[in-house]
Length: 268
Image (cartoon, rainbow, N blue to C red; front, side, top):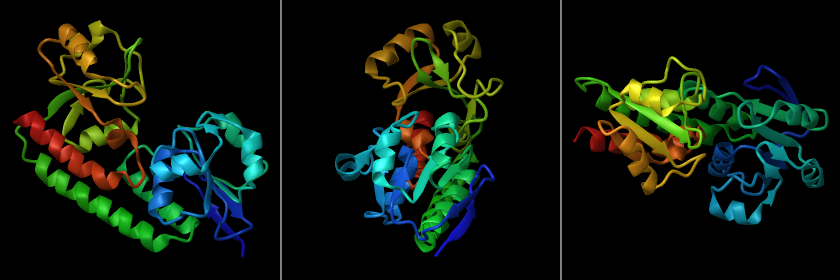
């Protein structure tokens, strides 16, 4: 049976075979979602960055990186559906793939669009009931988080660093920005867009109460806390789990509780 869907870029995606039986996921957070939707046998290909679940990383065929896809490896898997993302994948490679296969694209910038993506992928893969449960549980978790952060006397000013040499931060128009906001933090770089390069001087001038060093894409470690602390002695510097702030699939089931723990740690 064939079906027609609309992706988050408002593209029409026709699936000659529905539900799909040979799915390739080009995005780590969406790969984890597909696992949690119960698509153990249907997913045949993933990227080298799709670390969760661990047994899929070991067993599934890898088709390159999110921005360095190997077309022949994809062709060998004969997919009847490829699932990608506007930010994670390159437009040029997606356009090539879309000439040959059904390619459904997500575009996630905040919690609402993440929930929409989960719902859409549930329909796309004939897993609507499971997707609805996941989305509902995520919404419940974030509602509880909102109740926790709302009474705080003032919002904590935060800088969220994703890269070193040069330093880069998460700014406006990013999913990370929305997660910071949901956790009750005010991003000191919201006047900038996306992932700007920042100087030490601009970090010092922003005077954040808290500087968060993400575990991805740059793997910040304990030694980097000392480095940043030397530059910004009046700021508190902490390592955080980047997956909780930037993975917008079923990892969000764990994110609200993680943010609650982080907030409790910061305000104590």
